[in-house]
Amino acid sequence: MKSNLSSVKSNPGSNDGIQIGWNAPANIALIKYWGKHGNQLPDNASLSISLDKTSTTTFLSLQKKNGSPNDITLEYFFHGEKFEKFEHKIAQFLTTLTPEMPFLLDYGLSFQSTNNFPHSAGIASSASSMAAIALCLVSIEELITGNARTKEEYFRRASCIARLGSGSASRSVYGGLVSWGNSPVLPLSSDQFASRFTLHSESRLHRVRDIILIVSSSEKKLSSRDGHSLMRSHPYRKGRKIQVANNLKALTEAIAIDNYREIAAISENEALSLHALLMTSQADGLLLQPDTLHIIREIRQFRESSGLDLFFTIDAGPNVHLIHYEDQQEQVLAFVKKKLLPYCENGQYLDDQSGEGPKLVINQFND
Image (cartoon, rainbow, N blue to C red):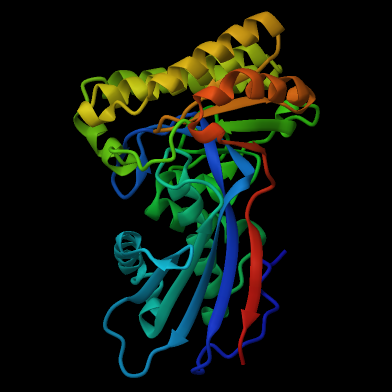
């Protein structure tokens, strides 16, 4: 099966424009990737859930340059406004890709991107953003080179490219439960790209929901990139590798037998371990806020009194993901509105669920 651009007819050698758009989801990790080495390779394997509505949409337009190309030429717009900080980051990223994507030097590039959730607040905005960009690049690569890939090859290529921009972005090119990083408990796993994690047909994890409680929408002081860098000299780095290997093995075993209480316990342990590593990295690593801790306490008390299989996880920020199952939605949403919204910034929350993965938004080539 060829990828969805294999039948497009165009004339990429002309001076006419080329445009493509992709929507890519944010993802929330149950097993956290933290620390890296080499060329954006993870210190440990991870396992995440790709969301449905919480996503980034990016349009990439290309215009043939006049004269000989020398360097990357691009503009990056976020919600219609120039975003120079991210534009510089994307320019560096694309420059590293030119040896394998030399056509990038032949075109002026324009990115138009929108999020439907706060960026840089610990909700994996870099993952969805870089995944959407990578998918656009691979689509353009197929068009310009004329080399169409199979669907599997296409998304694997996009995952590799996304990883180079943001490690967790490698997981956002797939839907459902997704793993990234080589591990003996994950068949066909790789540090180079992510892959879908297979669930048995009756697993309730097919229908998992996520209420994202926005404690703060402000940009966090310590970026994930800097946090990963601090792990290189972290005194607990070796112990973390042992811990995460044990947690991943235990989680995959719990998923196989539908032990939802064990899934909850491991996921919460991973979230709090991540923040323990952050807090012991440097002063700016204290990303949790008092209201984050209030929410955690309320969730645990409600789980105890209700007997439901819900649990929390947190990425590198103050906002809390309340993970639960579709058959619990009515009870959980009532609990959120009654008990948790007072701890959220302006009562903000996002009601989401696991999703099917990225979507091709536009496939338009101007003749």
